Image (cartoon, helix red, strand yellow):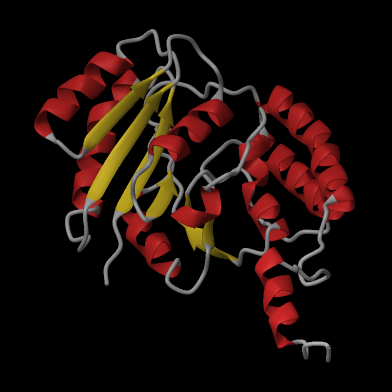
Length: 255
């Protein structure tokens, strides 16, 4: 049976990209055979992003909007989106049109066999500095966490809803979600996705600062891996009614 879909999109000062993004989402999701919601999380924008989202919402009832009163950061926006999402499949997408909405159905369909499908940006259109620092950061993360996630910075990912239930995120940890979910036993696959140059606005997250913060966060994830409690299958449970049933089965004492 086709599964309902939630597309979670954090946005911060992306007013110029709202209309073209909504148009591309409508085209990409036109044939999805189950209910769809498009959930924008406005992370305290001050450039008219919210007003343009409301205009788009008036034309498309599938659009839902959550609005922070100030900027909390991308991880908080993701966490809020996960909490509000109602679909059986949750897809995350950047709001700057560098991720291609046309890739959403393909990743969402992969959750039929996998718990998480991660995008790998093919032919990245970012500048050489951003690509270089990303390669260094990814290599270090994988070395330290003994993982194989190729492109942690690619926001385009699809999750089965149950994977995200009960997950607690800390600032910056959305980039480690596949690794954290692997620790919980979920199956993760990775596939190439399209990548486009930013046409309007500018990036809101400094490359150097993001890399330094990400490298520091690696040690937090490594600590969690090392100290994770894994006792599944290593204990038995004896309930009170089991004792009562056992007592009934004992032979009565001769008088």
